[in-house]
Image (tube, rainbow, N blue to C red; front, side):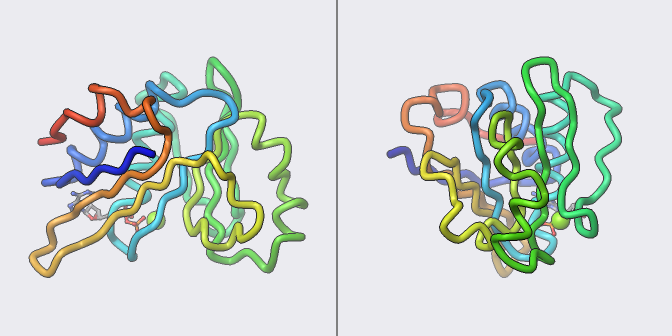
Length: 156
Ligand SMILES: Nc1ncnc2c1ncn2[C@@H]1O[C@H](COP(=O)(O)OP(=O)(O)O)[C@@H](O)[C@H]1O
Ligand SMILES: [Mg+2]
């Protein structure tokens, strides 16, 4: 399974990574975003959704309170979950998790998925160093993270 780490020098670098992954994403995919507050999860999500939907001006409201925001992309629906406030796995069903999985799901706070964590998910873990430098660690998707992602440097 593919495992790689990249330095994300600035916000633009995080957006570049998001677009590179949006190009590879297909119906049924799950992308799980972890990392501390301010690490860049929402920056990543906005750039990913705009690219996947083919709309640079797409409004991307935070799903903090609604827990999910769904968009219609050309190829399928794409659902942006923020599970921080999720009560439990039952609530996930009420939010339409099963239907959302037919399209692409982008999940902040995926720890809350517990047993429903998709086994084939791409794990995207952001860390922030003492100097504020963001690093991303990618795990999953095997060969799909081809040259476009593995050998790329996202320099902003
Ligand atoms: N390399 C970077 N990638 C993403 N955001 C960065 C980076 N460097 C600085 N930032 C700043 O950090 C903040 C990240 O915020 P946000 O994406 O909302 O974090 P999270 O959703 O993980 O809490 C933004 O204000 C952004 O401008
Ligand atoms: Mg956020």
